[in-house]
Length: 134
Image (cartoon, rainbow, N blue to C red; front, side, top):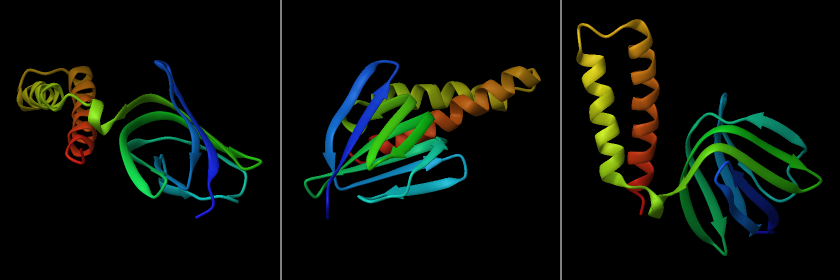
């Protein structure tokens, strides 16, 4: 496959910069796959696994929120949260999942607590899933 330039910049800094053959990310309307020659586009990111193919090898990451853009063959991924699979603390993700589940199981949780717990649960599920690809 023909490579193209990709930059991944999160609030924590530059996560990746280099040539890749493919990028797959979850947008708010579904997954998008990007190859060299992709048409110009900008899309908001959802919550899911990102797949980056470099030299024929797949790397996975938890990618939550932000934007992806393709302009003149250059791809910029600007996620709110980005964690490579090998950097995810699976125990921490599991603990976050358990805390969120406890709130959801509680009969005294407020509507706000439930909404926050649901979001925490979705993030924990993404992180657990990606961590399992190490």
